[in-house]
Amino acid sequence: RSNKSRSSAASDVYKRQIRNAFDEKLVQADRLLKNNQFAKAKEVLQSALEIFPNDKRALDRIHSIDSTLLVQKSIDEQFEMLLARAGEAENQKDYEQAEKLYHEALALKPNHALTSQKIEESSRIRKDIALKEAKSAQTLARGDRYLREKQYENASKAYENDIKLKETDLLDYR
Figure (cartoon, rainbow, N blue to C red):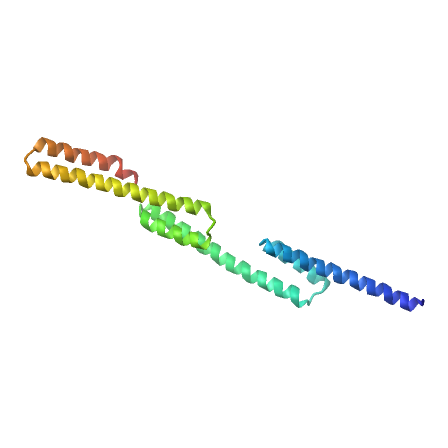
């Protein structure tokens, strides 16, 4: 063999090695993308572009990652805004609104356990309030009945019980 053909063969081997290294980076990036490891995948693709700077496949994947990350950032921002608004609604004791906002947040991130817990908590508080308000209404109705029947001592006790109920139970939530 001539020096020229040996040099050409060595050059072909070198080119194949470079191509294989590049292709391996694309495969590695694809594995990372399947596991939603976008930032790492982008780093691998950028290192692949150091080998072949204008490779359309690598450039397209990076563009796709950037778009996905932008959408994810928007979802994260919406999610955080909904959680903040739900927290404000809780602070204002508007548990119905808080629960509604937590449901909206959960629609954006269905596996967010803390949000699910907050929904359950808001629902439980609303049910507790409804029960206590019903108990208060019954106590007031009993007091009103005693008053109509001129049983003033019983009416007074019923009204006092209602006041105590409201001072203790309802103030926990209102």
